[in-house]
Image 1: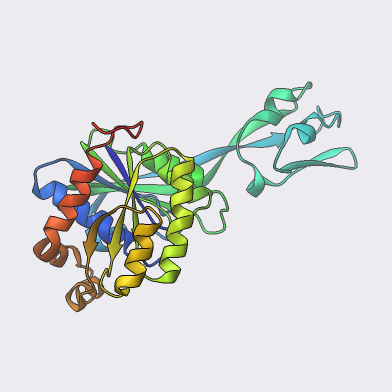
Image 2: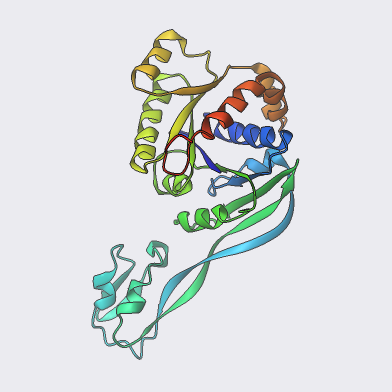
Length: 286
């Protein structure tokens, strides 16, 4: 089963929950893989400390024009929905950072003046730590398109019984790509007006994808009864709660917050796994 851990904003404890869930699976002898799809700011392995066993470069295809064969017909410019290729004085000019690698320009060129070449956008590091399989993407500095790298990370460790996807925060293309095709989405929030607002946006994105989800409240005791009532009035099902804890914060600063959570709040983490198992890919209870 694929479980995506997401949030409407950064700093809610998404990575902490993802790692705790993976550790709980490992301790229950369930093979687990932790996939760090927050490729612009990867941090899972700062805590997991997996031994990296392999590194793979991820490439995308971009067009290259054979200018002597090009007649300047403009078919490539007309098909590109992202303005990645335009004609300037009858000659095609390519903006590689805007290309979405759809291949449209290559297929419509009547003169076969366009070929597709590989462009590296980042790397995937894979390994194992604490009985958990790990794969994490790292987007190259200056690259604008992270979804192709996220898709490549999601193909890693298909043999694991449970694959936990640490998604980028927010509701933009990278977050949507990470959540897409998950069996269940865990939305991590903090009980504040700001957290509630961003959770509402994230939930809208998950519903648009047609995926089942539940809410985990991190630092659940900081918001008070009124804000908790507002969460429930908006129809959010709170499946687990982790209270604010100085011990967890201190463990986080040392690079080990998971052991504290497993020791003190294991039942709450197991609630997440149990709740997610009720759903299949179509969002129906199993």
